Image (cartoon, rainbow, N blue to C red; front, side, top):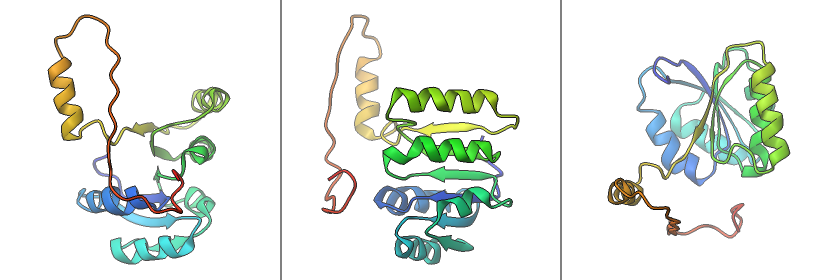
Length: 168
């Protein structure tokens, strides 16, 4: 449950974080935005000023090592998720990470062991940001009564993506 969280740290300040996550996160009662990190310190600085974080950094470990931060939100490029989640869990943080949790099976197995072996009460949540989009809800409603197997693929045009974005 996310209600009542106080000190929250964010790792990553890309388009999704700045345009979707943070504008909605500041509306959640009880969330205190403590620190934000990005490899590009300038984007973290901009997000910190805009959304009221107490500090910003270009070193994500400052967020993980911050004893006041209880929940870490990870929205970095996919290849960084598993390592950052593992580090945060080992430091006793609750973690919300955007999908995918891992990109390699070995990473996923390692995360399973990390969570299983941790001696803390950390909770791990994985976000699927398209789950509640109008088109996804419409598809789910139309397919709800279907019994036969079905493979369904759809493409989403999410708008302009800069040339230096990780997906390019």
